[in-house]
Length: 104
Ligand SMILES: N=c1c2ncn([C@@H]3O[C@H](COP(=O)(O)OP(=O)(O)OP(=O)(O)O)[C@@H](O)[C@H]3O)c2ncn1[C@@H]1O[C@H](COP(=O)(O)O)[C@@H](O)[C@H]1O
View 1 (cartoon, rainbow, N blue to C red):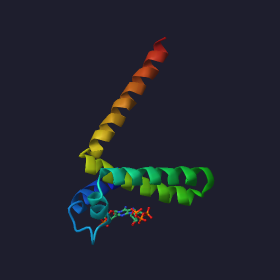
View 2 (tube, rainbow, N blue to C red):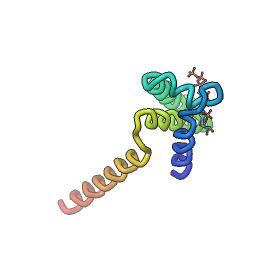
View 3 (cartoon, protein in one colour):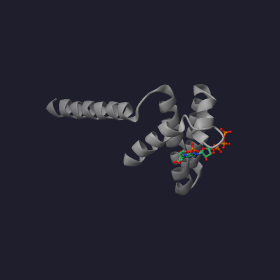
């Protein structure tokens, strides 16, 4: 998590850099649709690596996917903490489901 938080901060800082010197700034300048398209491409490459690639390829594609997802979230003004809060909420809900099942 520290890694993702650090990367989120780096991405925020690079958003307003020169597109000539920063991949994040260059991608951001192309707009949300292009960033979303990159997330889709990286997701597909991750799926292909999982189904027919090595675990090394899966790790590499997963890193590309997480990176581009963080760029997309930043471009949309959504914080990683909001996504984590949603995951925490679901974890709580699934705990409640388990408790409900145990008392049935
Ligand atoms: N983690 C990454 C990272 N992962 C992947 N990439 C870039 O993502 C691009 C994706 O490659 P592709 O082959 O899919 O796409 P492409 O053909 O280069 O580009 P498109 O024309 O398809 O858009 C490559 O150019 C990679 O260099 C990244 N670029 C930057 N980061 C991090 O972001 C930080 C800031 O980077 P800058 O904005 O470049 O300073 C860096 O310090 C890193 O920590």
